[in-house]
Length: 326
Image 1 (tube, rainbow, N blue to C red):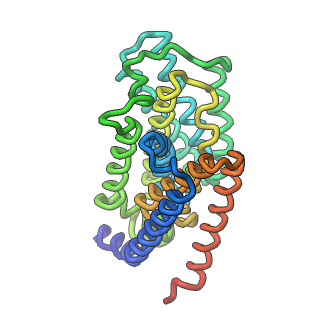
Image 2: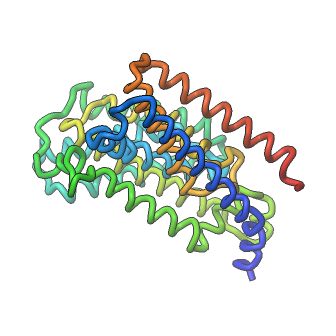
Image 3: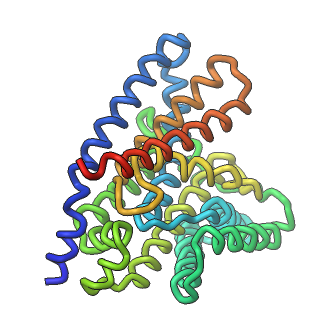
C-alpha cells in the first residue's frame, strides 16, 4: 500500500525527466561539435583522455550532490570530506604501511561516517542543510589540517597511484570508478524503494510523511552515500597527484552543484535524474577544456560556470512557474 502511494507521488515527474535528458544530451552534442571547430586539438586522443580523467572526479561529485538535490538538500562540505578522506588513506598507506585495499576502504568508510554525521545533525535538530554543511565544511577542513599539519603526504605506493594516474586500455581508471558509481546511483534511484522515497520526499515532504515514509532514515542514508562517493573521489585524486594535498576538494563544491543543475535536477528537489547530473558534468568538462584550448584566461572558467548555473536555475524556476500546468 505504502509503495503504491509512493509510486503515485513520483510518477508524474517521470515524463519530465525524459524530456530534460533529451534537452541536456542535445546541448552536450552541440557544445561538443562547436568545440571541434574551435580547436584542432580538441579531438586528439591526449585531450580526450584528459577530459575523461577530469570527468571521473567531477562526475562522481556531481552524482553525490545530485542525490541530495533530489531530496531538496545540499552539501557544501562535499569537498572537505573528499580532502579529509584522501589524507586519512594516504597517511595509513605511507606512515603505517596499511594494506592498500584496507586503507582505501577505511578512507571511503570515513566519508560515509562524515556524511552520516551531516545527515543526523540536520534531521535530528531540524537544521538547514546549507547552513549546517557550511559549518561541517570548516570542521572537516580543520581536521584535515590537524592530521597533516598542513603538509603534503608523499610517497604513495605506485601500485595504488595507478588507479588515479594510470589507464586501462587507454581509458583512465577514474572513468571506470565513475561508471561504477553511476550504475550504483542509477540502480538506487530507479530500481529501489529508497529511490522512490528520495523523489517523493523531494517532491513533497508533507505528502511523503502522510504515506508513511521515514524521512529521517532516507535523508541520513542519502548523506552517507554522498559522503562515501566524495571520499572515493578524494582518494582517487590523491592517487592522481601521487600525493595527498590539503587542497584536494577545495574547488569541488561549485562543480558538484552546477553539474546536476545543468543536467536538470531542480534545487527544490524531486525533479531530475542522476543521468542528468553526469551529463551536466560532461558539459562543464567540455566547456572548461575548450576554454583552456582556446587560450582564454583559465579564471574565466569559474565565471562561465557560475553564469551557467544561474541560467540553469532561472530556466528551471520559470519552467516550474509557467510550465507545470501544461
